[in-house]
Length: 112
Length: 114
Image 1 (cartoon, rainbow over the protein chains, first blue to last red):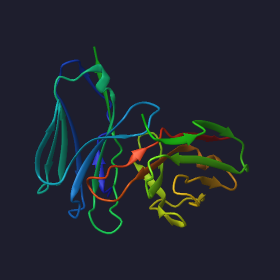
Image 2: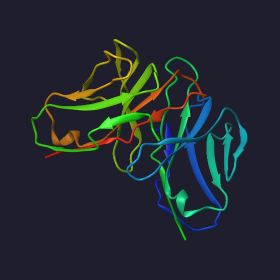
Image 3: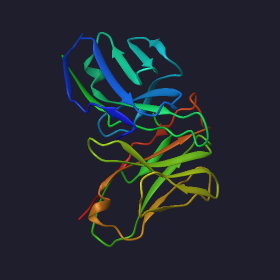
């Protein structure tokens, strides 16, 4: 079983839609949760991170973590064509090497 | 704009050749990493370094080697390239470990071995 499961997509939505991107993970030791965005032919860049269960909002983006069900979500409001990218969830351990484990990424396409 | 640079961006090379993928960062970060990324697959950690003269193998078995003689430079070498090495290689760095220290990635080297 993979440590992090993520639907690879692609997920196609019209401009202005609310987008929900999701991950599940199996290791209950994960303590913090990052979302990276990767544009085509670029390296991933950090979008958001959160430590604990609950919601964290940053502009049009909301990260949500439910540790009890090991479920991570990223919501994008009023999606724009510039949001078209691959979104990777990456839970991490806060001990030892503090490794990040990446999901496969979900490819999002926002059409104008 | 990323402060971590990878060269070359694209490389097509024949089987058996020795290649070195370059990675440099100007941020003074101690910790550096090499990841391998195939289409539709997770990023897999292949090497990491905590600082100068420190290198470790990652989760994914790799026939590549790395060196860290200078803080800013973390090259990856394949002594004899094979078609199975065809992939995208991403270099990353971070100033410290922990949730408030994100990885900074370069734009990758896409390697094709024919």
